[in-house]
Image 1 (cartoon, rainbow, N blue to C red):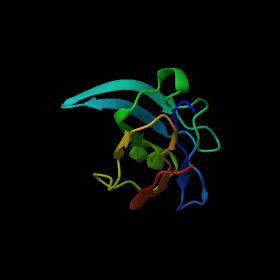
Image 2: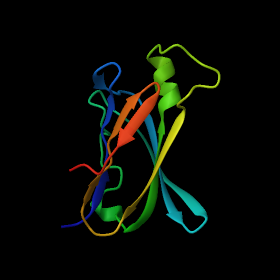
Image 3: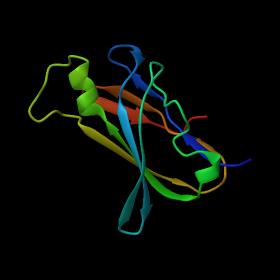
Amino acid sequence: MSGYLTTHVLDTARGCPAEGLEIELFRIEGESRTSLKRLTTNDDGRTDEQILPEAEFETGTYELVFHCGAYLDRCGVPPESPRFLDMVPIRFGMSEASHYHVPLLLSPFGYSTYRGS
């Protein structure tokens, strides 16, 4: 099996997928952080394509940055200055050629993630 990376963002406060949330993918090598891709979630809270498809997959350390503040602003969540959650970075390792699914469960004052399937 070849490896690839996906995500799914759910707005747990509103009980729906987080549509229109921007996500960036970075590869981490030592102190170096290289931008690989920028995607936006669709109406199901997923990206229209794999974040890191099989043809581009390499094991290593990566970081997904979820632009939660802009999403919460668009949803009408009352703004704070500064907003409690703005950019949510999740740094993780991929050690084998496998399907890595890194979902985000989001509310204005908290989030969680896990390695999904």
